[in-house]
Amino acid sequence: MSGVETSALATDSTADVLIPAAPPSSAGQPASVASGPNVGALLWQITKFLGSLLGSFVLILVIWWLFLLAFPDIGPIIGRTPVQVFQYLFTEPGAADARSEILDNLTITLTDAAIGFVVGMAAAVLVAALFVVSRPAAQTFMPIAMLLRSVPLVAMTPLITLVVGRGVGVVAVMGGIVVFFPALVMIMTGLANAPTQITDVIAVYGGGRWTALRRSAIPSAVPSLFGAAKISVPGALVGATVAEWLGTNRGLGATLQQALPAAAYNELWASVLVITVASIVLYAIVGVVESLVLAQMGMQQN
Image (cartoon, rainbow, N blue to C red; front, side, top):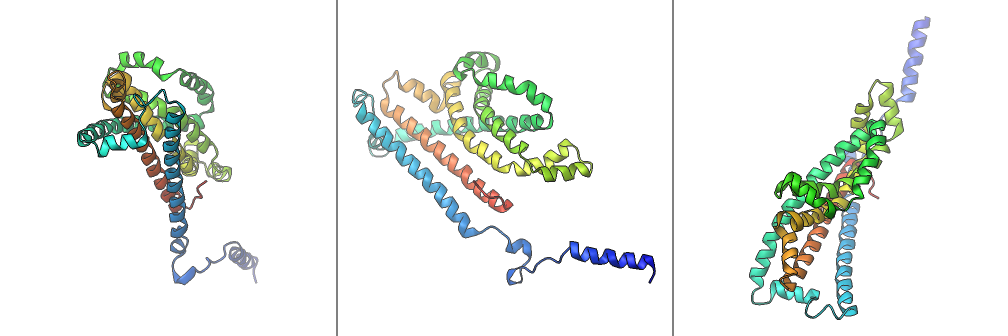
């Protein structure tokens, strides 16, 4: 037997050892189908998540009630219990008009919050990607970003209003500021913790930093992206409310501003409750989407 034939046989036997045959899937199904997400475990995880949020809401109502009991001077003129708010919205004679007005203002606030959320998250993703790819940029601008974050939003509102006006611009800027900074830190952490093995393989095959970011860092940072979104959803509502209070004079933020001097305490407490419920519902939606996406990607949720 020639040396060439011996070498070919050795190569074939080595390939058989290094590349074993794919194991058969259960029930004769393809491996990709058999290894899909466990639906029962996923539903249980979502149920636990929603149950914890419901428990948190009940705890908020209990704290609200205990607060009014601990400080009787606040009520009954100013303070309203959850039962009184429920009666104001559903059982009193003018409940339909009050509910319609608050829901109309809630629609405006949710729209403003969506604008701030999209602007802030998009800016956070772009800046985090730039900072991860370019360390000098991160070292130069990250301290400036943290310095700006330390300035109270209320103090910046007159300047922001002067620059962008009292329309959609102030909503986008103020909501984006509230969302941007915490999302930036979380997304940067997720991008920086990409698996080094995959990054090294990409570098060996000639891929640059942007290729490693696209192929390795971004997929591995999906849990951090959802974590940033869950934190940013309530922040976007807060930013929208502040922008409406101090800038646009519409929505639930304006309702809170106008209800206090007008002694419209039923409307005031109902608006606070509606904002709280909206924050919890939006947080729950993002959490459920996170569970579904991570299960589909085969990632374990913390």
